[in-house]
Image (cartoon, rainbow, N blue to C red):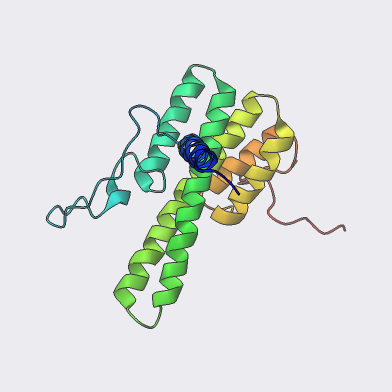
Length: 204
């Protein structure tokens, strides 16, 4: 038989073991819980009486917005002025991605509302075109940065994409073709001068 002293000893040992286990588990959970850095934005409840609070994409610090893309373009312009071409390239790539995503989303909404609500469809289609234009502008600036960094092999595909998107007759399409001409990727001037024939003459 086990005497009472042994029982008391086992109970005491068990309580101590449980206390240690509880302390270890508490420390383990605390270590696995990520801590927000000092000054990080905390989630705030939305005030239903504040119209701006329910439209977070209208805020200037939001990336997926026209303002976010414009901020990236401004950052890129400053980087180019400082001849910090790697930073400018990164900012322009980000701006191009933002504008492309926005254009795709607006186009999807326009397609979804086509035949249901013409006002919504037209509004989203217009936004899709506007953001596509901004995307092509960012792409053109990115191609110029690649030229400045002596990377014509990266500039050429971007310029071809712009011409396909903008069409050769539009201003940005013409400028992109001129860049291809200066790079030596194409060898025929466009737009042609008055002296240049628009079609090859037949051999007589």
